Length: 455
Image (cartoon, rainbow, N blue to C red):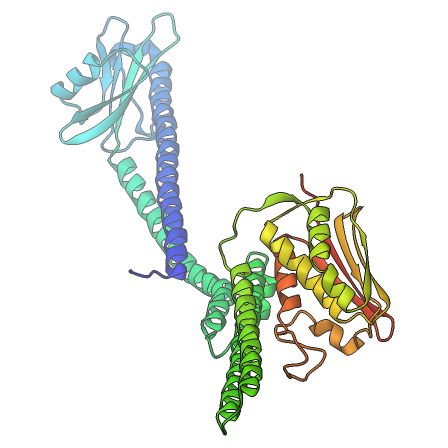
């Protein structure tokens, strides 16, 4: 695809507009100049005709033998005139007039001013009648060649002036556009330096000070920051997942190697196989949670539906009642009223299961686990609180990180994959809700999940 320069496009547009303005100005100025000169010519023509008419009046007693004093006239050598009596008789005429020219003057329509061509020249004439009772008429004509020549000179002057001004404007426009577009160029250069290996982007100060460029600069900065976090999160996820799977495979391999090091009886083989099945189940659980997390973070979001969160909570707590009895933990479930939220039923089941199971695993014997669903001003709230050992304050900001465990040991006895709370966070974010964990060492932990109510 052919590229184009924004500077050249803007410069060309501005110069085209200036060129049109210059041409329009030259044309209008020339027309105005011609109109002004024509009016001045008409005034001069009338003045000369008036002078001729005045001279004829001064010599009225001898009108039949009218003679004109040259000192009383302002006449160009190319001017022609006639002085006619009311009967049409020629009383006086210019020396350079010919019969053909006289016939042209007399034959023109009755109008004050009229134009005609004779001898390859253009003339403008004035028919000026006298107001005396025995009126005479003066027809005075002058060549317009000088008028046209002056109009051409005026047009050339305006054209040359416009061209000179246009050249100055071109230089100023190019300089101005380059200086004003420099923040945009610098922004493009810095954005072009961003790559997979370098996410650093520092928008230029000039771009941030420009009202039109500031949203673009901040949007690029925000976008790159989000992409960098996303890539880092995916990189950590891949590394942690590989570590988890490698650990599980190493445990399986060592268990098999230990089982085959010497002959064993049936009971020993059965116990070894049981341990292997437990490790395989843990790998299956890890794989399932990784797939669940990948599904939740996929671009395509399945259509949700309105579900009763209270019903889901009561179903989950009923299924985990046996485990609670085994842990000697009493569950106080407060979810009697119907509370509707918008979510996939499967996601709601995973969310409630992870939160309740996690709370049961950290609840001491003979304690009470509170699980409640209630309506608050901001929507529907799910509250899960245990009376366990609590969580250190330094660990709270990392609880939703993938594969993060407060207990850093990765033994088979510790249980869990470190993805449960990350999955809960993804489900809540997908539903445009909010999840918060409050905990104090020795005083237990509470999880508060707030959903917008279903309309």
